[in-house]
Length: 65
Image 1 (cartoon, one colour):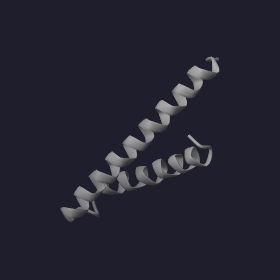
Image 2 (tube, helix red, strand yellow):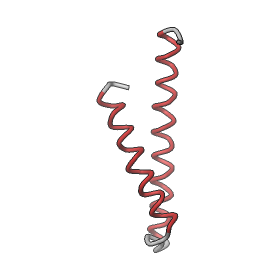
Image 3 (cartoon, helix red, strand yellow):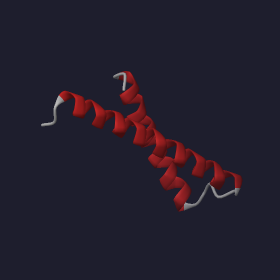
Image 4 (cartoon, one colour):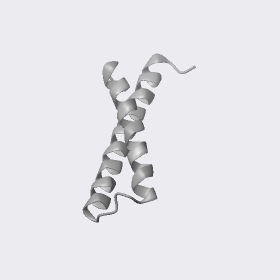
């Protein structure tokens, strides 16, 4: 098990990466939506991923991370 400071740094890095990925997925969804490709498999997969990422971000924020 990592020392507390390293664990906190790891959680912070995880939280940052999830937020960054969420922003990238949102951007890609907007691009696909603008191109009229909302019925594609890619759009649907990204949409599902966005929901998952938003749930993770929400849980992180509940805990102050």
